[in-house]
Amino acid sequence: MQIGPFQLKNNLIVAPMAGVTDRPFRQLCKKMGAGMAVSEMVTSNSLLYGSAKTKRRANHEGEVEPISVQIAGGDPAMMAEAARYNASEGAQIIDINMGCPAKKVCNVMAGSALLQDEPLVGRILESVVKAVPDTPVTLKIRTGWDKSHRNALAILHIAQESGIQALAIHGRTRACGYSGEAEYETIAAVKAEAHIPVIANGDITTPEKARFVLEATGADAIMIGRAAQGRPWLFREIGHFLASGEKLPSPEVAEIHDVLLAHLDDLYRFYGEVAGARMARKHIAWYTRGLADSAGFRHAMNQLQGTHAQLDAVNDFFWRTRERTSRLIYLDAAPEQREAA
Image (cartoon, rainbow, N blue to C red; front, side):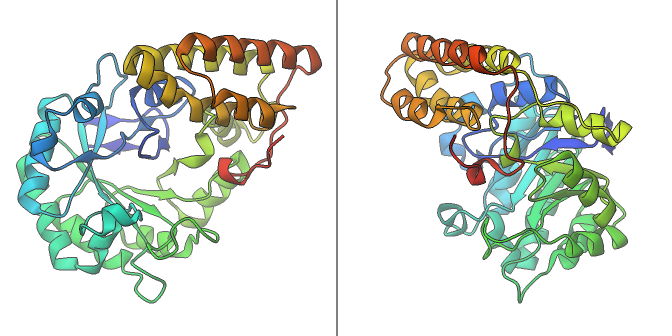
């Protein structure tokens, strides 16, 4: 799959997730087989460009290309400025967020709330594309505002006319949030009329589901979000299955231990002692779901302060686990749906 001048190594893409797809997570997923990873949302409010959070989100030092940065907002001029700012900071692809269903985003007429106003969608897309003529611009949407107003096809035509170079679609409406099951018929209808690459997103949790979604939609690529939390090797598993039709065995507990330690080290370096320990808690919880006695471990982990205490607890837990079993046995479901061990 190609976006602008960038030929991706495969058609597996990490979805942008607020508070998750920071540089350490993006780098890890790319190492585990993802062809591209989109950053968490960066605000279009220029007053926040100097904040520590925004600067950190614009930090792409050492990141494997292509570097895709997602911007969010509802004002065409501010979105154009955000695109220019992030391109100057190293973004090689600008992605526009019109898919986030969060109330705090939609209430300020951003994210998927924009799908209610197609003329505004057009103005934003045209402004951003014009602002960064040498940088490809992509768009992420949902199938519509609600089930009675699925307008992804209309958005496709607006996007193509505006110069958008790829369209990612989550198979739910904004009103659906993350409830129920994703539907792929709308994505297939969009792909049938598209002249740009279409990326399917939503409920892709296993190698078999990845193949099904690609076949059902005809999409050029798939985008994986929540299912990769604590399971970054999912990209490796899907890539192998799509290429060979064979499933890889689940990872050994020893590998999970090593991957988690490397991820924690990267988080601590990126965020610092205090913020790093805080950010690490959710990742540790995701990695350990599916392992025996992990529910009690996760509860105790959330009480610990500091990186050294976290590392000691993680090492103790995994060494005890490795004495009992060599491989992880996990449920093939999204992280929030997996049962606690």
